[in-house]
Image (cartoon, rainbow, N blue to C red; front, side, top):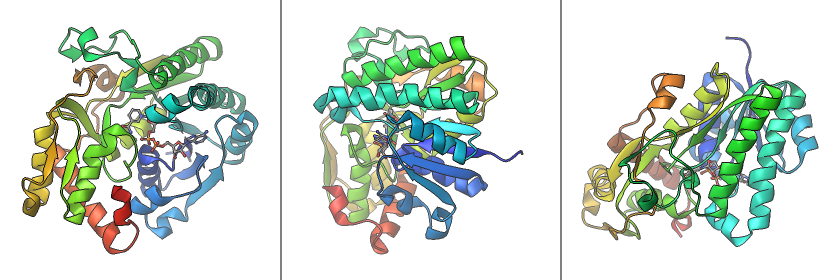
Length: 325
Ligand SMILES: NC(=O)c1ccc[n+]([C@@H]2O[C@H](COP(=O)([O-])OP(=O)(O)OC[C@H]3O[C@@H](n4cnc5c(N)ncnc54)[C@H](O)[C@@H]3O)[C@@H](O)[C@H]2O)c1
């Protein structure tokens, strides 16, 4: 394989840390481009030796010149764009949310064009869809109409439009991916991180209550990261965006998987059986058509591995019990 140099934005975040881990394990060059400077999620899943192979740029996706310079310096061949502010942050400051999520994404496409990278993968979200009652079909189709109900969802939909125009005007092709509930080590902020927090509580031997339930699509963060990498490497012409699926399960199955890993906690992980307002299930066959077989970690294995990584990190001090708060 010719030398590949990956430029990963938002790589100090949950999905990004797993993207970096996979690329380092493959021996690829990786540049982390992130506004933050705290590598705690990376430390949770990479050794200090592995981290030493990563190039770090502390930068803001609203700064086009810095992105272009950093991509040039890294001799970037592949881009995974994950940087963004999540739902509560966009709600609290919509203007900042739009700058980071919308202008930031325009900047990544523009920088790709300037440095001659002709294809990239980027994170959209299930939040482009509206409330579940607006979608009568039980399995959301690939081309279901976006009707976002949050600023965050509107910004993600705008990014999908940006991707389309960069393909039409500049031949920059792209694959956007719409994750739903991502779980696993590193998932520590936002409402849908609470099932992962319950796994952390299990690692600490503590009870935990999740204030929602219902049936949803859960995907292990290692699988999500691998799909973003596959999508960045795909020989794909066009600008399309795909739903991610993973395991579509009820909250009882999440709790059972936690109890299977930690039988002593039986009955201590509880939840309110209120469903989330998003469509429950989605068709990911179009993505399989484009990328081939997708990585899939069975739920029980992903949950057990998450608890085991948390336990190890609690034991050696890389994770504090305060992380549960
Ligand atoms: N985790 C999920 O369940 C989920 C679901 C749907 C979509 N997504 C999308 O996937 C992407 C990654 O999600 P995640 O869970 O890893 O998010 P995260 O919040 O853990 O990480 C986001 C990263 O972006 C960085 N960032 C924020 N503003 C920045 C800026 N101005 N410039 C550069 N970096 C900046 C943050 O420092 C952080 O490290 C995001 O775009 C998110 O919207 C995630």
